[in-house]
Length: 331
Image (cartoon, rainbow, N blue to C red; front, side, top):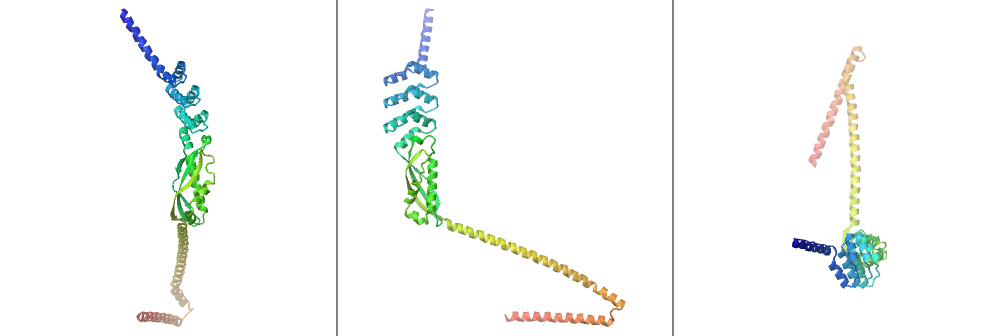
């Protein structure tokens, strides 16, 4: 019975020690003490209670202390609770300190919380970055297209990193400057002979205003001759004018056909009236004979006149056909 109670006490003590060392990172406290970083046990316990991983705070604090930075535990813990990356901020502060740059902890933490990579920004401030624009299409006044590529050397501006525009804005402004410069050139040959006129004009526009970068230089990497846009536009304009003229001619032709059909209808209507009137002639003549208004000899004279007229028309038609046949034979 005595041995059973002793074993129980020993098991409880072992479980307590395991829980104690698991809840309180004694090894981390020893590392901080060896690095001359004063962190109390109760501070580590408070981190656990506030759901803060002590490793995420103590290791960056050790690095900053060894680098000669004056940071305290509360600053790092507050930045961690705000959702920031403590390790990246401390690395950025160390890099800025080594490069003799004035970067306070508050600004570095604000840049990190704004979603920017503060360490990359510090590296870009020390070592400028080269951004290459895509092929920009621009047309000179003579209608020739030029395809230009530029390399933009930029340096991060830490003072404007919060709220400043990014790389996309810089590339868009440089592309706009290239289009404007080429568009004001009288000939594409001027640009090909002096490509530096693009970089000088674009650089003088102050394109880095309102951005998170400082433009150091703009260099034209390549200029190629593209299409003859002016000739293409003239060709398209001529084609459009031709289509308009054809449409108007078709409209006039349709109107002429409509008028012709209308006149044919009128002629047919008049012919129908003539035929109808001629059909009434025999009846009128018979009525005139019955009433004695004309005599038999008058009727015969009129018939002779009609026969004589028909004969002359037949002779004239036969003469015309013979003349045409003779002409065709001579040809």
